Figure (cartoon, rainbow, N blue to C red):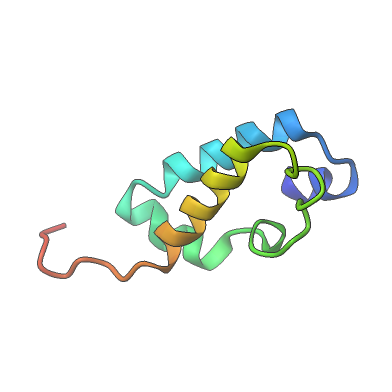
Length: 78
């Protein structure tokens, strides 16, 4: 879906995709998986033009990237 969006951008669909990834990143196991397989297009500037007027989705994308770069809390039981 993300690859398709990079070829034919849709701000509305991108918003839903980013929100889904962000919600997945709330789960520790999903977060670990996303660190391995998050599409490169969500890590680079591929969607910069598509998001220029959408502050909410930009904020979600930044939060997603922060969630995936944070170190796991080893003191908390799984």
